[in-house]
Amino acid sequence: QVQLVESGGGLVQAGASLRLSCAASGGTGSTYAMGWFRQAPGKEREFVAAISRSGGNIYYTDSVKGRFTISRDNGKNTAYLMMNSLKPEDTAVYYCAATGSVFGLTVKYSYDYWGQGTQVTVSS
Image 1 (spheres, rainbow, N blue to C red):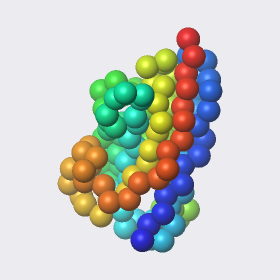
Image 2: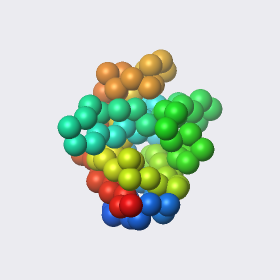
Image 3: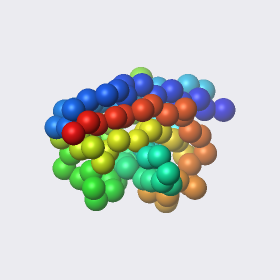
Image 4: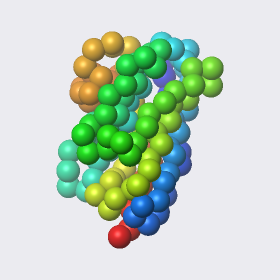
């Protein structure tokens, strides 16, 4: 059983940066692909970014390309989401997720394990 704990959320002004971390326990660092999703009030949970087990394949939703960077440190069992040039529309609860699959990393139903989420609020 894998447990995921997110941290790093907060309240920032537009244009600022935040780095989210996702610490995994209960599994080895390279066993799972990792993804970040977000959910704004009244909206469905949506894909943000994903990284394969080795880090060789990375995916982003179009709205964050060029602003967000996903990475991982398998030695520390931790994934990261660096968010730059934040916009008010980035406001949401951000969740990290893990999957043993190598396919469908942009789809939330592919993920087996989820963290509890961390709030990111961007003021204008």
